[in-house]
Image (cartoon, rainbow, N blue to C red; front, side, top):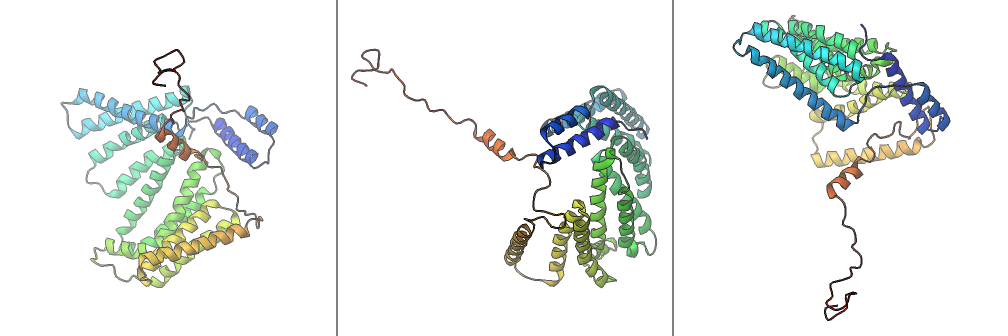
Length: 378
């Protein structure tokens, strides 16, 4: 599918970001950085984060006002068919405005284009829920994916990508729950689906979808772990079978093993392959695994648990920092990227306190005798 944004500018933007990171690490000289900036131009309009949020809110309000204005002409017709036609008309208008703004104003995830995209998708999918109220959940998921997947391929939006990922999982889950063994095999089925998605998106080499690829990788790893976590499987089994109290599940020892083995594997392969997403997901999985084992095996007061956990983390962090002062195995203790909002705290404090009053210094005058202030009230 044809991409909405200029693909060459997207590639140049990525090259310039990489060059600035290399320059910060003293891998490029200032002249080389200037040459990169001159030869790889990108004319996208990319405001700051706060301006982007403001433009996004403005875009949503504009879409809401437009929909309300158009609905005035259909105020006497309250049928589902009329509302569906109104929604489709709004979706067409929002999509047209989105395409024009991207082409003429050179927007690139600048807030306004995101708002128009979400409004168009919401308007386009509304008729499905109005006209097919009693349809199975799988029908809603399939129709929704027919809108979401082309939007991901064309606009590479992170929120739309996330929505498409979860809608696909809901489709798979709702399909297999209807089978006799579906509930029992659901964790394994979702793990297989998550693994398939993960290895599929890793084949992507297009910079245009890099951010989408990263978010899908992280979500796939998280879902794979969650579906193998003993706590989630046990409580989910009780919820699906309407049990008042969660009972012991089948293959419990397998899920005990997976709860610890999956995060450990993430951390190992993350360090081995220098994959930050794998490594960070593994660390978060370790935290979730500790919580899971605590729920069923340990009964310490919360204060003692926090103290022990904090002490262990401090010792582990200090040991790793000391060990990695000299880079080993391609890993060091140096931060990978600069903080985007490194001075945000100082800015917020300055804004809240305001300007300090300046020292007025020595003031002349005020006396009642002579021009220099001398007198009985000196």
